[in-house]
Length: 119
Image (cartoon, rainbow, N blue to C red):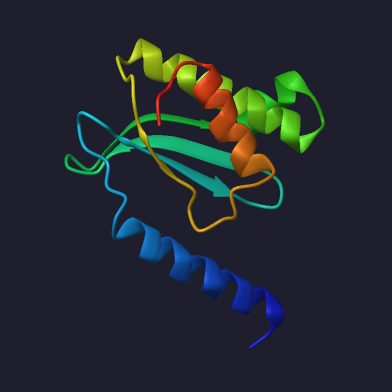
C-alpha cells in the first residue's frame, strides 16, 4: 500500500468516526466540506430527508475571485452562507469530512460564519 492510499484510508476512517456523531436535521442541517487538490466542494445536507439543500464549489466561485486557493475557499464560504440565508437556513452542524481544520477547510467555515451561519 502506497502513502497516498494510506492517507486516503486514514481520512475516510476519521470521516466515518465523525459522521457517527454529526447528523444534519431539518432544523439544523449538516455543512459538509470536501477538499481535493484543486477544488473545495461544500454542501448543506438534511440527513433525515436525504436531500442536499444548498451546494457550491470553488470550481464555480473561484474563477470569479482569484487564482489563490485560500481566497477561493473564503469566497465559497461567503457564497454558501448567502445561498443558505436565501433558503431560510440559520444554523448548521459543521462536518469537516475527516480533513484537518486548517487552511482551506477553516477558510470555508470562517467565511460561512461571517456570512451569518451559526455553528
